[in-house]
Length: 191
Image (cartoon, rainbow, N blue to C red; front, side, top):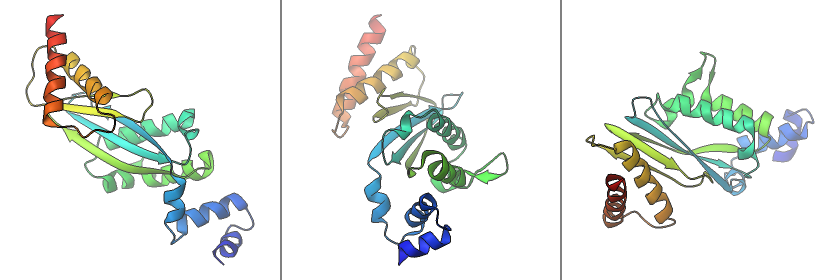
């Protein structure tokens, strides 16, 4: 019955009917089961004291290789740097016209023809922040410092790289963090 109603509401256009079913279904499993790929995007502000890390879920990895997806990711990051909560970001209007969630839905339904979702948004604030995003876009580390020390830009970048490389599937412990910080600072300070 739901399929028949979707076809009627979409006036026989199958792509719209499928999107209608996905977006308006009470059965959330349709969405959850279709989201199999995860893509991480990060950005910090110019003052280097605030960063945002966003986990985007997609049905396939093909959509993430699309130039339009990269443009959408940049729009999302630009908006996210101004917010503090996920719901505020999704309601933020671009050029005083459309809220971000409608833009994401438009790209999802009309450009990618694939469901995408902003699964998680993490905001980090500290006097100094740096991050490393793995080239596969499925791992990232963001580090914050309360005090500025010499070579902090390089130390923080190396620490984030070490965390990404040494923590595949592990929980980051204080010991692992201390060990990586010691390795990184000894390398940077000796150069």
